[in-house]
Length: 286
Length: 286
Image (cartoon, rainbow over all chains, first blue to last red; front, side, top):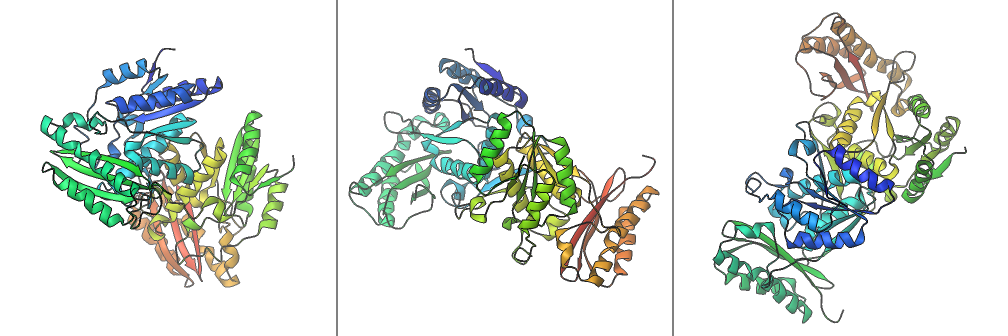
C-alpha cells in the first residue's frame, strides 16, 4: 500500500478510521522528524506488531523551553518521508503548528513525581509539553500501540503514567536505543556536533557502561557508584555534566542504595549540544 | 432494559462496549450523586438524545480544597439508583475512590485562562480536579455526548475547552438550570440550609435577574451594573458575597463594557453553605 500523508486532524482520523473499520490493529510512532536509525528501529518493531502503522512528524513547541533549540531543531521532511516509505509506513501525520495548537489552546497535562528529577528538573515544562502532545496524538489517532525509544526512558515512564492515570486504551512499547559503533546513542542532535565534540561525546555511554559494571559487581552505594561515573566524565574537558543519577526505573526517583534494577541516566553538554542517555543496570545475583 | 450498576472500570467499559457494538449512540451524565431535579433534567435531555445512557456517581476528591466540604458532601446512593431506574438510565458507574485514583495516580489536567476567574479564583485546584475526573470518565466510557448543567457554567466552559484542546470525539451539551419556585437554583448543597438561610438564599437569583434587566435595558458599563447587584446583595445580612462578575460567556473573563452577551455569575455564602448561580444576559437590540 502506498504511503498516505495527512496534514489535517480530520484527514488523519479518516485514514485511521478506515483501518479500524477494516479490523486492522494499529500502531503510532510519534516523532519530531529528522528521522534516524533509532526511529527506523522503532518503525521496524511497530511494523512487525501492527497491521496498520502511522508515524507522526511534529516538532512540538510546548516541550522546548524559551532558551532551548526549537528554532534550530533539525527538520528534513523529504528524507523523513523517504524513510517512512521504505519502511512500509501507512500514514504520515504531519500537521502544522496551528492544527495542533490553535491560538485558543489552553489545556496542558502535568504528570507529577516521575518528572521531578533528571530532564524534568533541568527542563521545566518539558514533560508537560510532552504529555500534552502525546495525549493529543493518541486522541487524534487512537492507536492500539504507541512506540517510544529507550534513549528517552523518562519520557516513556511519563507516557506510561499518563496512559494509566487517564485510562487510555493503548499499549505503550519501549524499543531499545540504537547506537553508533563507539556507543553514542543516535540522536537528531548529534549532527550539530563538530568532529572533536563527536569524539568526546562517546564518553557518555562509556560512563553508563562503567556504572553498569560496578552495579553488576555488587556496588550498592549509589552515591559512590555515581562519584566514579562523575570522575570519568570530568576527564573529558569538552563535556559539562548536567546530571548523572541512578534512579528507580519505575518512578524515576534517585535511589541511595542499589537493591534491584536501577537506571543510570545522564545529560551532558558538548559544545552547545545537549545529549542524554541511560542504561538499565542490574546486579548479577538478584 | 434493567438498570446495570458497574463499580469497576472494566465493568463499565464492558457495558459501554456492548452498546457500541450494537450501533447505539451513547451519552454520559457525570454526577457526584445526591441526585436532584437538576440531575433529573440532565438525564431526561440525555435520554431523549441517546440510545444508551450512563450516569456516573463519584464524589471526586480532587476537586475539593483541603478546607472544603468533601466529607460532608451529601451521599444518598439508594435514592440515586431509584431516580436512575425511574429515568430509564442504562448504566450507573459508581466506582470507589481507589478505582479512580489508585495510590500511584500522578496525572492532572490544567485548563488555563477560562479558570482564572469566578470559582477558579476562589477554589484553587478545583477545575484541575474537575478537568482530570471528566477526562478520565470520558476515556473510560467514551460516550458520544456528555451532559452538564448550566448552573456550573464555568465547568461547562472548562470541559468544552479541554475536549477541543485534547481532541476528544465527544459533544458537550449544556442543560438549563432547574430552579425552585422562588428562583433558587437546585443544588445538592441546598439541603444544608436552615429555613431562614433558605429564604435569604433566594436573593442570589433575584440579583442575577436584576442584572439581566439592566443589561436588557441597555446598561453597558459593567462596573456600574455590578455595583447595583452588589447593593442588592448587601441588603441581605445573612449573605456574604464571594464574587459577582459579568464575564464573556466563551472565555469566562470579566468584561468592562457589555457589548454582546455576558454571563452574570455569583458565589455567595449563606450560613456555612456556599452557593453559586449564573444567568446569560443579552441586550434587546443587538
